[in-house]
Image 1 (cartoon, rainbow, N blue to C red):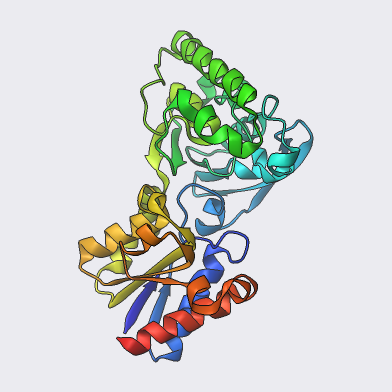
Image 2: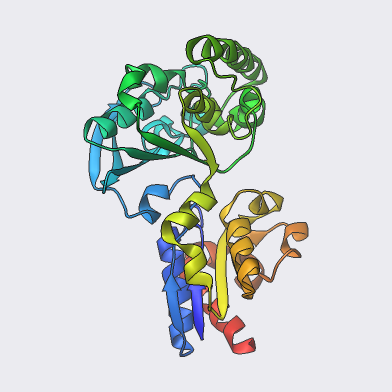
Length: 328
């Protein structure tokens, strides 16, 4: 049996690579062959699944203090995660964040540095942001736009939120009060006009432009292409070729709900498996009841209990997959 292990991270308990290895151990224990393909959808972990960081640069953190951000440059392609420069974790979580002040300047500094070092293609992951500045901090930090002519910039998004809805949808998770959400929304609405005048681009009607508090829209205004992150990663790792001829595909993530099938890893991998006519198993930490009926799902919390599922996530993944293989 040949099994493709293509999970996302189990946030806080297992990276995508660790989860893929846990799946592979189950397959090998049952005499099969496993192909490990850690996945990401544009959120945290993008750099890791596309080869891992090989550069570290000191940049402006989300609240102004310097941070050291890892990123990758290989063969003229740079991979940058906004979370490593302007992420909510770097701001101390929602409790420590200052939503009105949080800036994407560090992302812009990384992009400038990558291009200065020769990158002609740049992949930018949007997940895990502390910011709702519409990307203005990044654009200002990038310097003259002329240096980006001829550079292909791909913005990997895991949501389809519009630009002016970014504060309403995401800012409360970043610590914003209702009053701050209104202020941030007004700021985004003004930036629509600013970008129209500065770049001749109307970001108000672009799907995905609200990703990372509008950073995606800001980058789109200067010419970047907004794409579904899971599809971009799938193309980079040639997931379609790996799935072809497999006997089973196993994917998963920490929590499964309706959004898991909307631009996230589980939904993306499921689509590739379906296109190839290959059975799919979804192993998750926990699951919403309605989402769980949309695929063959194993919930670690339901199978092993919450305490063990959190404390021994990788062992639980291995055991759950092995049990399911025995049933095939």
